[in-house]
Length: 609
Image (tube, rainbow, N blue to C red; front, side):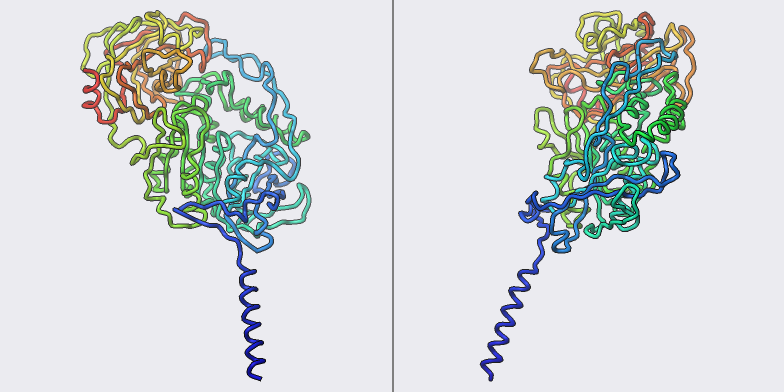
């Protein structure tokens, strides 16, 4: 009898071991503070993909029903077969369903006098693309194998999402908030656009991280400004953080680089891929009323319309950890967009890091930085990411995957050096840290047809003023936000004012690097010399003090180069194109440049002697 009992017990014990082994769940794996690719999650043929519609708090298409956002989900099969719950990487966009064709007349005509309205432009229609259930395949191969669920959604009024595109309006913040609420069980999701059958996110831990590039990078910030619970971390890449700063510059009507004549209503038409039957109402309500009455291409002043589309004004509730990413030579969404939000988030005491590279638009942080960020704040792994360096800067010539770490940005060792002007700007004036007196005035004549690059290269020109340092005797590290203070007069009631900081001699060779010529740039409207919210016509010959910041930068100018301050009027690539001939006069004794130099005045003087 004893032998029988012993045998039964042994068999039961063996069965328990096998049963326990079979019940072991696949789970995320972490090494060195980063989520690793898990073989069980990497088989794409076993990923579950489905879509749904999340109900929001708003009705922006005028049909009397709360708008629903189209959402798609990609998750490992273990979230169904093993009851595994995972955090979510969430990407939302107005672009997923296609954009309008770039037809002739889509952009505003920029060839007209300042203060005048251009002729009406063309409004093309978007032909909607895409089929259910997949909205996008972005980010899934990167994050699903590492133990995340990836969620996509189309912005209001785009794709199968209801509502109206508002280009920075409140609904573009509340739409991703609703999706995050649904991932946490606080909002309803439905299987159909107009159905009443609900669907729950039972596979979600409720921890959400957002990322994306350009407009797709703006929307994580928009969601974060709502303070929604569950949004733990965001990684915006080249985000547009203020539509005023995107389409205006210090009171000046200025286009984003590469899109001369674009404005907020152009972008509205470009993304409006939603329900064709709702487009008429949306166009009338948003584009032809709110935007037309608020965007003001006449004065370029900052007003309530633009203030409502500036996320810096909405950061009070924000609590998500922020890893910001941008390129210093992004002349589309310029680097001020990321810096202004990074600075404010840091001042709020939020976990913050910033990654800058030396190239143009786009460019995510290295995967290891993103991985550590999401591992810490979505999986809750204590990897000490909050003790890492705050700033990661890709040095000139280095790969974007190999940034150099610094204590912060701007470099804490940078100090502003005041540089003044010595006359000779039509040929080659002097930019110096020494005190200058009685330099008098110098003039330039506006001509939009001459590119800034040509003005920087020619030996002399009546169309610009150029002031340069002596050749650098050693490398000079610039880090921060330069500021220009100009005392200027015009012989016309309105004029453009453009300032470039350049590295000379100009390198025209095919092998020239993006950092070889332009250091940074800025633009302003002298009519706004007192305030961004009010402009006034300039009195002929009267001098006005105009001060404004150039774009943030972190660059090492190599020995043998000269730093040049290039001042001209209309910028062919960015500003309106008035008839050439406006004369600007500069008071040299009241004009200066503040340059943020690592090591300050001592470091600057050392390399120019």
